Length: 473
Image 1 (tube, one colour):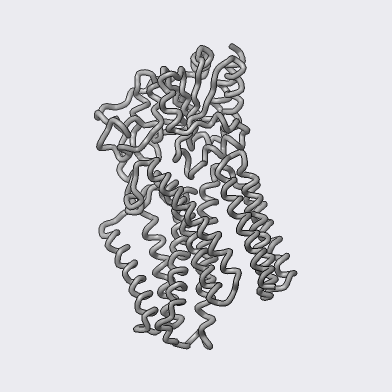
Image 2: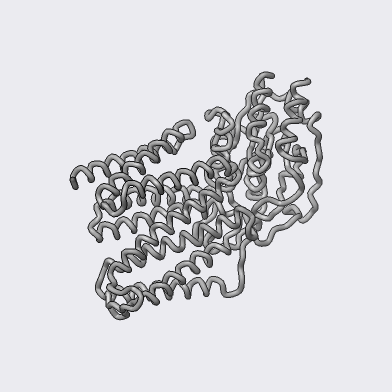
């Protein structure tokens, strides 16, 4: 039976690997998601058969409850709310791993409420405490990320004097607790465990609140990695407890953890930010409303009718989507605009910045949902050399990722950040709801360029009007 179970776990792991590989491309992402789901199904069934700790009616009952929650979320959460949902998923993953560790801990007590046991020299306890640490930090850190993204708390960095010192003290206390208990110099009871859990939960909050909204794509990727590492650590705990099912947790957790770290690095490179500077926080705390030269930017407003005439005369158009497009839910209307331009013989492409939106790949998913052909989505490094030959660039709800200040202003918070060089095109039309600054909290020099026109208004409504005007020309 053990051989059968192990072989089944191997199949599940294979499904996970294939699923993650297919998730790397928009065209195969749905297949990847399905494969990973089947892999998880096999893993759950095999674990129930192997452990014999719950009845099948309980499994089916909880499966229906979980499926109902999942279906409800998938049908009611808008694409603009997907980053928040991902943050919650990361938090639940950390919580599940921490609960596994806490459960294993209490199995070592004959009377968990009052017993004191010297667990010195037990290497397994190191794994338990590390699992609780990673899981708890992931839980509270993810909730803070969710609250900031969802507008339930201020998205700006929350900083105060002595903050980093306080975080360091909390971490030292946690580290000291792990070293002392694992070395046998300090006996641990349930009360001390609860204090340890409390410190780890506070640490997750403390290291996340100083991180501003502009860095949220990096934070989400990092928390995703944390949830994978927590799951992998929980797998070691299960193996120590004699459960061969820990193997699949180790492998799947390692896959998630490694891919999350790779994605985190990609995000940091895309923003020209080190992970250390992101975790220190404070980015975007002090924004401005003036240009780099200290002069107020002079906007040149344009209407949908005039914009349509500019587009009709173009041979090549590049559309730059941003989070504003997601908020306006204008992705389908953008596709209709693309189709209308192509009917007039215009070559249309989409420029995708790695950190456009609120999570990695956000714009790709939005446009794929609207059936925009994948081959039209051009990455930043490939599209930047094409801007000088582009007639018109339409920026929809993007801000910081098209800010030339990243290259021209060494004192800018985004100095050195790779951006889409849209200002090199012949004409730039920027659609914005208002004159506010971007998520980084700084003014955008692009809006004052001689070749930039501002199409103010709701993204969805403006695109509809622009498309209708093109139809009449």
